[in-house]
Image 1: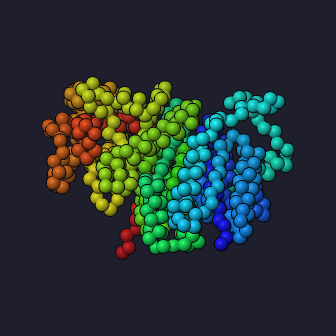
Image 2: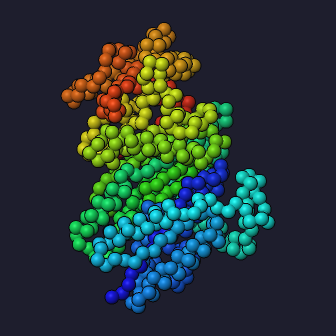
Image 3: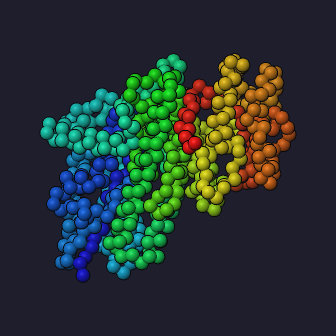
Length: 541
């Protein structure tokens, strides 16, 4: 019987490599380099005739690639696998010495199921990463040029090698860009091209989106394949199709989002942005399976992320199940450290997932697409937890209502209407339309009153004759809940009810439900938000 050896290859510490500079062009280039070194063309470049996509590639996805090597004679398959790993690792470190690259090799156990073998292979890789002797690279080797921007050493390659490598990276970048880019438009290469307006609104949005419950979804797919008693070859085909479909669907949602932005540009609804003709106010950085990162002009950061989540929810994967994902949006000035902004966007995404898990305990939030965000006005704190400590009011309530739910699955997860993103959008439209009725300064000063607590905020609105600011959107909250037979803890009436509201569907672990401001998120976002209208469906006559 022929021997089979499995190989797994993965890049570790991706984010620190991608975002090590505050230069958008370099960030995108680094992301393309990481994607390239775990794909077939690069395997062929590194290993030559030792590698064939048809014979060796099992699947690529989830940030890694799995390969197989088969031989009839004992020891030959193992030797091929080890030789491939040596050649590939050497080539990666020759081309990209700062990339943390790992491989693991395992003999296929014929007595175990295909899925058990793949899980064991992944376990070997994790053990290897955990055992590494150092998590840093050699900073300098003595005689090298130094980059004046970040004081890192600059490698000097032969001119032919450098041009060949640059062509490979550029080709990979173009291939991935073309999968998401609307015709007639290009993506910006510098933050300044995103469309910010100096002295008016010059924030950029760093957006991280991650699929919900994808690990559990893969496990369930494996279990389904096992129940069908598939052999290795059939199993290999199925998981490859499954992985490729995830990548296509997430890229398709990104392209849908870009398309909606283009429609709004061409309809004149984004004229407030300082855009060059044919340039999108969005730049793709990472589009790898269910892992998405991009930057956008700050005023469309929230709306673009919500558009992505809505588009993704309409798609169905290879396993016949719909998708859901969560988004974290960090709004910063261009000079803030990009890596720190991305870390905070990841934290915000986890916050949105955590809220979804509280709402939908049956599937741990896998069916809830939610969004959370933060606007950084001053010095950035170390963590989201520290940031959110500043959002407590003097009377013990919360200023922020976020995270918000963009969409839920077909099971009808119960959500407080005030925590639906659609309600946030409608209130944004409502309160920004009142800037002629109420001075913008008065609306912004409301933030200070809200921080003092519910009574102080109520007095501020009454004193400034701003009665309808709160009532217009939240007057239907109690009606909707009572119509559904629910009895939330909403005390009082009028402004008592609408300025702060409790969320009975996402109780804290101690069962104490603190109330959240219904206005703070909107007032805080007033200067950093533009609405993206969806294309209206044509009705057949």
